[in-house]
Structures are given as structure tokens and as C-alpha cells.
Image (cartoon, rainbow, N blue to C red; front, side):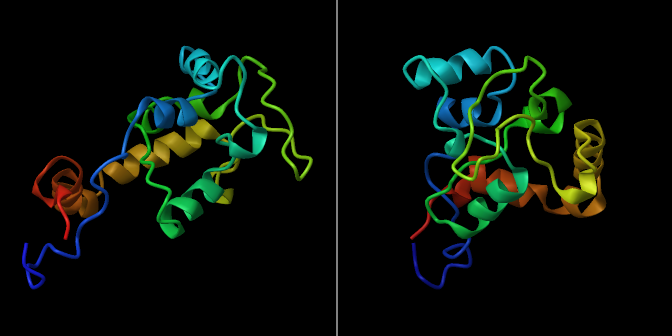
Amino acid sequence: MHMDDEYATNFHYGTHYSSPGIIYHFLVRLSPYTEGSILLQSGKFDFADRLFFSLVDSYRNATSEYSDVRELVPEMYTIPEVYLNLNGLDFGVMQNKKRVHNLELPEWARDNPYFFVYHLRKTLEEDYVSRTINNWIDLIFGYKQRGE
């Protein structure tokens, strides 16, 4: 690939955009992913500080840390229960003394995962997404997978 190729700087990640560990990470509150997460961590949940506890913090990491290559799984756009600890699982307490329970949502979602998923799905239907989703498809599944 030549450096002046228009797609040379549009490369995202060539690997790791999805794996069982990432799926278990995001869906830890929903069975059977709960059990998969426990199996992955040798019979217990991962450390509370490494669990999926805040959407805002996860977004900040994914957009500022080169090592964070996770992508949201489709269930996050369709199943509000992935944000709720409906089974009352004990995920532990983080170093800041906060107990991990329901996922912390952005303020605008008003701690309502049903409201949040409704708006995510509504956003996916907007004109901007319809005009540009092909770029994401090319990046994840197509010719833009290869960078310099």
C-alpha cells in the first residue's frame, strides 16, 4: 500500500474487534454469558474494577486508549436487560468502594436501559448513519481492514 493511498490512514484494527472474552465482558449480566464469563476467569468473576460497570468510562477508554479494541456487540442495541443485574449477581466492589451492579449509563439515559436502547436504535435509523454505515462495514469486514 502506498502512503498516498486515500485509505492508508483509515485503518482501524486488523484483529481483536470481537472475541468470546469481549462478548462475555459486555454481556456479563445476561445468562448464558454470565456463565461464560465465569468459566473464562477460572470459576469466578473478574476483578470488579475490570468488569463492565460504566458505559461512559468504557467509551472514554475505547476512544482514547490504543490498546482498547473492543466494539459493542449487537445485543447492546436490542436487549435492554444486558444493562441490568436482574439476577442480583455479586460482581464485587471496586477499589473506589463502589459495588458493581447495574451498568452505569450516560446521564441523558436517565438510568433507564429501555430508554437508552430505544435511542440507540433510533440513532441507527438516522440519515447520517444510513449514508455512512458502509464505511464501518468496509472497515470491519471489507477492504479497509488492512493498514500500512
